[in-house]
Amino acid sequence: MAIDTTPSKVASDALSAIPFGNIIGGPLTACIDAQALAAQTTWQFIQNVGLNTDPKTGEKKAVTVAFQFMRDGKMAQLNVPLLTIVPIPYIAIQTIDISFKANISASSSSSSMESKSEDVSAGINGSASLNLGLFKVNAGFNASYSSKKDSKATQDSQYSVEYTMDVAVHAGQDGMPAGLAKVLEILGNSLNVSDPGGALDVSSQLLKGEKGHPEQLIATFKNSEGKFEPEKIVVIGGSTPLQGSVQGNSAVFELPVNEKETVYIVSVKGADKTVKVRTVDTISADKERETARLQREQERRLRLDQMEKDLAAQRQAAEAAEEKRAAERAAQLQAAEEQTRKDDEAKQAADGQQPGGN
Image (cartoon, rainbow, N blue to C red; front, side, top):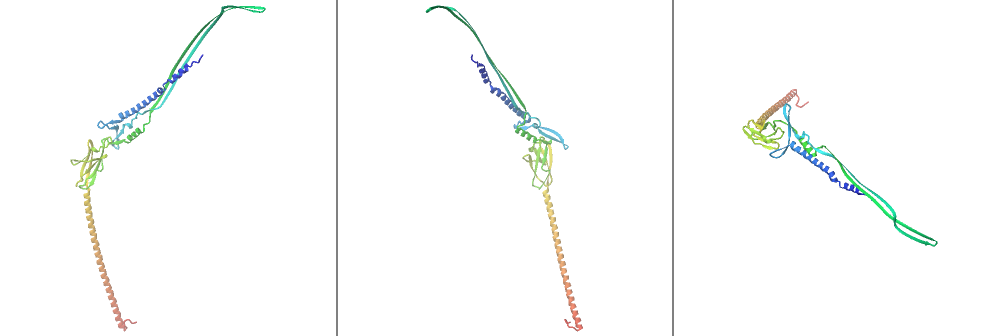
């Protein structure tokens, strides 16, 4: 009886028919879709929680949380970006384990049963004689034949295919991407402490200059959120506001310098902040003082020159008097010597000696 290969062929066909692409690719595709959904959720969280949209310009601005506290006896305000103090959901799939098992069973059975019977009886008549010399043989025969055969065969085939697949997905809070981490670092560095009512600063509250030559004033204003708003700064001299220009984060004004001290009021639109700035004509006064000093110096030099002249005249007169006295002393000495000589000559003459003798 031939070997039945139907079960193995059935098993091979069943194994070939298994959709491995869908079985393995399906969970992977689902994980990729889940990862994309997680990233979209992170972006929506940042958009909805951490950012505000300006309805006029459409610009995105970071949401900040303000805390007020006492510092150095004054109320201060700490402005913190919200995204730096709340955890950002960033779920990422870390591992995917897919376990697949296929159990294919196929069987085939066959059975065969056969029965056979035979019956022999006379069914043919005949006779024959043979002479062999002294002998003579006579023979006769009668034969019959019948047969019966019964057979029975049965065949049974069965197969089954069973699939088992386990998918284990492990996900958790992942590290922030480099770009988002850098954004959070920048937001963290933007943390600042400000005045709840805003802070108004000026380059100087006393400007010294010269009449007719304006002096430059630089003013800055930070609102309660720590944002510069130079366009809100106003300077009033008397009853007339002065026009300034915005340069970067500051407002620049040219304040006229008058002969007398002038007071200017620096204020901020919509804020209770004012600073007084005075301009003083110190250059003119300094020039007057310098002129007076130079005049005094000149007078002192004139006096010194006069004193030197007087001293020179006195020295000259003293020298002339000294020379006169020296001449008089020389004349007196010469006269005395002459007189002595004459006396000596007279004495010698009186003694009877010639002048010049021994």
